[in-house]
Image (tube, rainbow, N blue to C red; front, side):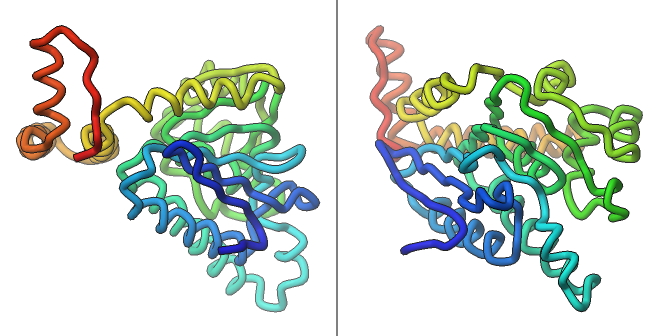
Length: 260
């Protein structure tokens, strides 16, 4: 299927999604929200795909919501309601799919663009790239990202960065704990590929369930989460990958996982 606002390709079991509105810093409009959600849904149900990489075309990763469209919208309240819902569907799909999602932050990430990045499971970013929550700066209450950001950096830091619409670099994001790796621009693709190559070899069912458990741990109480861990481990023990993993361990060789 051909898309207007993005491109997508699967190479060696890794799905590559590139936001493709470079004239608008790949900012979200309704169409991008719809197309990105459609792609993510297809990827989620494709068992041959081991991981997902999201990147932007041109100078930006994602500039947030399309402010020009906000400006021309006759019913601005309804437009923001529709736009935030479109973005939320993408974020939910990214967090609930049992595949690792890697953000290749090639350029600026503001507002919903920052939210998109921190909804990913791993973030690799280019040196000096700027980020920010941005919403307050245009007189808008945040339409996404406040929960993720607060859990990542803590309450007082979240207030500092969100309430003052503070712009920061990925180097500061690394210190705050949510950027996994910072690289030179020319090294971005190789650095992301290093992560992706790990997931080609790891057992996808176990990786997916581990991601689910990490996300559930953010809200579960200890007793319920321990029970969920027990149930999930028991389920994964019935897979062919587990049988291969323990057999390879006993035979002192590297396992070959097939996702079954």
